[in-house]
Every structure is written in structure tokens, then in C-alpha cells.
Image (cartoon, rainbow, N blue to C red; front, side, top):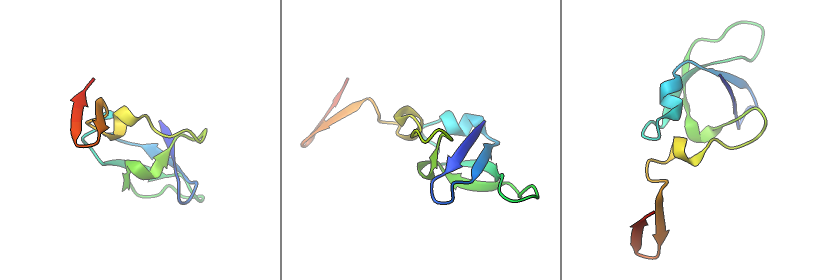
Length: 78
């Protein structure tokens, strides 16, 4: 699967799909597809990645508390 790095617009091949879907993981391992040579695997923050179409990654992949509604001081489960 490929995602795009927001800051560089480079395509990143995700090497750890399980980490991409896991909201408790903040980073994934991937390889940048920029330039002519294959880059070494590197760590990328999920918050800095989007789909190549320009869409943001789903909140359920980024935030382990995505189901909680925050209103003022109270936190309610949905």
C-alpha cells in the first residue's frame, strides 16, 4: 500500500500495514519512492501521511480514543 508524505509529496510504500491500521502506533515503517534508487526503510509519523488522492487517513487509524466525544470537561463514550 502507498501513502503520501504531506511535506514532500513523496510516495511512501508502507512496510508495516498492521501499524498503519493500529491507532496506538504513531509511526510506520516505509520506503520512500523518490528518485531513481530504492531508499532505505525509514520511520514515518502517521500524522504526516495522507492517501495519494489527497484524503486524510481515517481517524480510527490515528486516534485510539476516536469514539469518545469531548464536550467541555466531560468525556462521554458513544
